Length: 150
Image (cartoon, rainbow, N blue to C red):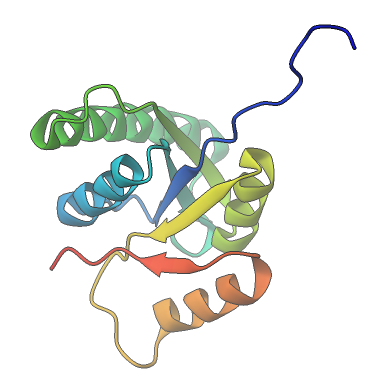
């Protein structure tokens, strides 16, 4: 026995997913509250998806990603202040590519995460968002939650 405790506390991280440069304040507040209720950390993954940004040149995408990250950090800061969660550990990550692939990659990187999807619009019984949620549910080992601001 070395006298060093190798056990590490596993912190559940709430991974909040948005794409196409969208982030609704109501769903962000709901996802942030979820992280607080679970005594975890909060990671906001914003994916600049291929479907929306395929035609944007790389040098412009760098600027778009930097500006989006700054804006999202400010929005997360305000939400934390609004709900009294100033001590909540937060990280904003902006990536470019396929929504599902980037999400799976981030979940693998985090190791232990609860996935909350912030929909960029209303959810119906069919459509691209419903299809995306079905694909994500089949690709990840945890429950995929849809942020519901109501």
